Length: 119
Length: 114
Image (cartoon, rainbow over all chains, first blue to last red; front, side):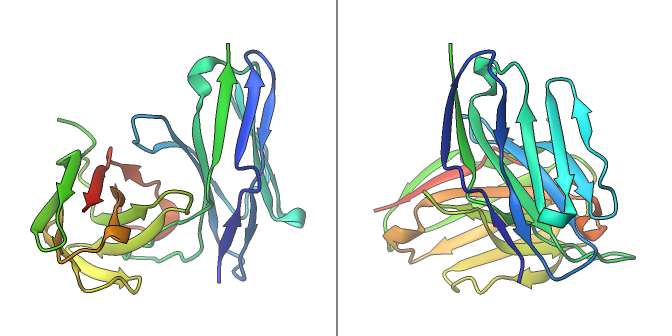
């Protein structure tokens, strides 16, 4: 069975500090996809990134960066120079099954990390 | 409207009521999902529809009944719910290629069962 663990329930930092959100996953499959979503107070989940299991390159998008390491089954998310608007709950998610020619699958989510950026 | 919309945004119902949650996606996607988000628990996948056919039901109680009349609309019919069913219910959609595509989420319906 697949599982996603976000050990940090809540993190509080002062604005402009860097912060890393941890995500560890378990899967028996060799083909899988990892995601990060942001959930601001409004409630809507906002897609941030998708990474497939064959691509271990780290990715940077503005102040956001992701470190994918298959050896440790981790997919950590770092925010550099954090801002108050980054305050939200962040979810890491895993999708294990891949269908070709149709079909769909749901995501397995971690419990989320509540990030608080203080001004 | 664009993206994924859900109505109502908030719903309070008694245990004997019957109500329905509605989800509509304007993205041309073929797959739609219902998730439940309870306090201090991970989001739980409830139902998956692909091309209007249910492809997954994660052991959800029968008091939750989904309906997908077309690829743009998804309903969740509720009847004789329990207080522990109070949660945020999120709808999502994606292209019909399994986990290759990202899922786009609606704002959710905050359900309170009295």
